[in-house]
Length: 76
Length: 76
Image 1: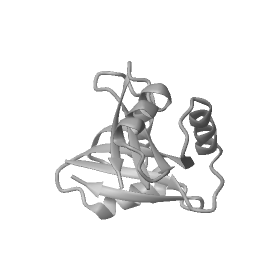
Image 2: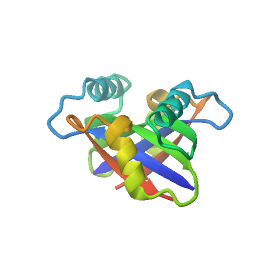
Image 3: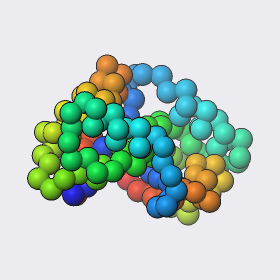
């Protein structure tokens, strides 16, 4: 089974990487890009029967820094 | 309006970052993690009426390296 974890900086945390992308898109002529936030996506190939709780523990332990990041888990 | 772009390495392209995460999860005692792929997610805050085609052009021009990466676009 698969799980997809998306890790984004929390609202209010400065995102210089996203800001650089926004600036670069403007420089390339793409107007109307008001804001960009960049995060990580982690696709996990898991043993059958792995629970969402176990994936949440992986996020808390390693995948996200919950002080400044939030995460979403999609099980598939 | 918002768009979310997910950029992943193509299948067959080595992903040392994902491999490092897989190894670290094992070292932390999470068994049953057979594989990990890590990618980027980019959330764009766009002017109303921006089309999916325009977002695809942003991907081709800047957000993804289509030689080694594939991208998915979700408009919201």
